[in-house]
Length: 250
Image 1 (cartoon, rainbow, N blue to C red):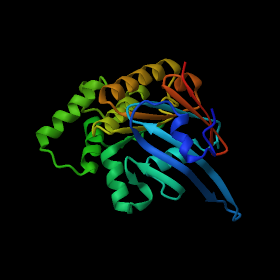
Image 2 (cartoon, rainbow, N blue to C red):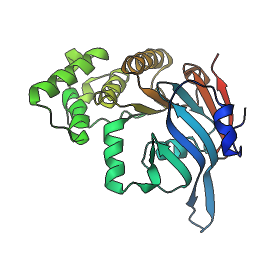
Image 3 (tube, one colour):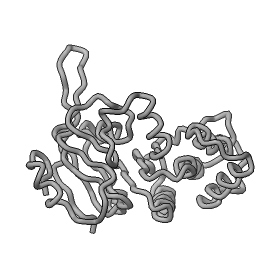
Image 4 (cartoon, rainbow, N blue to C red):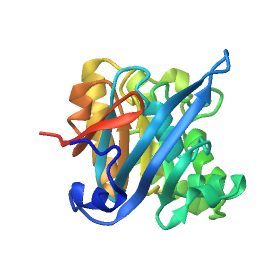
């Protein structure tokens, strides 16, 4: 089912009715300027709704626009045309500082390379997310939240360890804890199992889905792995910046 270039009034009807839209994309387009001065379209006229509490996989070959799309959805890139509504907020109307606040309070990220700070212990890596969020819980409240989240990913006993002492799977579980400790409503994962062996990746993926489900969050997972994509309820396929197909995972 193609969702590109549809009249706006037909978009909602073309998508499964699963609940309230968290993200609404209308004619979303982005491009980058190459070294020779030419412009390359990376996201092309995307029309779609991301529904609260649902899980989506974004798949496509290298250069298809996956990372470009999710960088916009994660409020990391504001260089786009068309309309992007986060809830009822038009993202284009937000200042840089307002966009940063929305991102810190509402969106969590998990990356392929874990992106942990090597000189900080597991506890401190997770704590950073709470500090960046800007809330001011007491130290005891913060500790309780961090340890509860580490317990959820099975790493409470590793709280005092440095990342270098952990396996790849354990480091990715720390990254998941860091992303979830602020209870985000949207979790964006870019190839979260890409650096792991198949068995470890499957265990981490199952943990990720369980944590997201328990938190009631919306999951947007970028992957080239069809097995990983099939773990999500809906698969979006991209090519040349367009969503060319939307299907329910079987």
